[in-house]
Image (cartoon, rainbow, N blue to C red):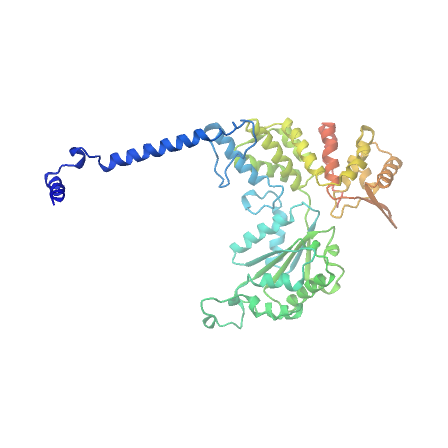
Length: 469
């Protein structure tokens, strides 16, 4: 009882226990923290010290949440790096209008075909020419105008049923003419819910002809990869059915091809329902426009000589413009410079060549090496540029037009030697022989390799006309 009286007395008098010779709560917590720190110090002494990290050891320069890791001038460089890696994206298509350069005439024509002519479209051209970027930008613009846009990428084993069942899952069932919105409840479902277990192009056309209250654009990208003739035949029949029923659904097909027939085959019944739209190479102004987007976005500057070299090396390919611009700008930023110089472009060629070589069979690289000697460079360089066609095939005349002071007999002789070495394949046709390199990355490798070995901008002057035209 005396104990409790003493406690009560402390409160009544406002006297703290510490004043009576006992530690208060704050002091107890401080002692506990000190004891814990001592224990941790002893544990750290018992552990071996971690090895010192070399300041030159590679590490990520920015965080995964797109924020720079440092401040001041380094932060300025880091921000430029973050921006440029999003602008110069050789491995990914462009999906934002602010990073889309050139192609405005092609885009305007594409919109005109869809909106005014209500036709289906086939976009064709060589690989890396910007078809996927174009359809992504189209999708963005169309959605702003309240179109329902569904994107699908074809594969080697794509089936008609699998592709279109997935497509229809993104089209709300509310847009079907015979649907009662009040009967659907909170989960209206999609048009795919109306498909039977097995359906064909005619049945799908009938279902899609019911779409009302909006317009639907279905984009089938990488269409050239689909190997099934049945798949392509079904798509052609669907286009015919949709057109005959004046459906509010249009298809946009995109793929690698030299012409419309290569992509869709010879199907006369749908010729009037489809418009082909070729993708040309970038013009000089469009290449400069792409480079300017990087400059304005990141605050960097490309010297005139550097921009000229990138234009020449790219040969009008958006992929190569972004690839060379990416590597050259990263090299300049590594040197803590916001200005990209010609020397950075030449240094970038080392990376471009190494990357291209890594995609090629080593045996093929060994076979082509003798043709990279100085006495053969002019021919191999012209052949590599001539191979910049959708299917890779070119004629001796195509290569001759890109090789100054090269006798026709010498060109034909060396092309045949490349075939004997297993570097190219040869196809004899009624109008003459045609050639193609054995692997797709090989022309880019040779084009860049000759430029790197020569270190002479005159060697990579862009052609005055397109070989693919």
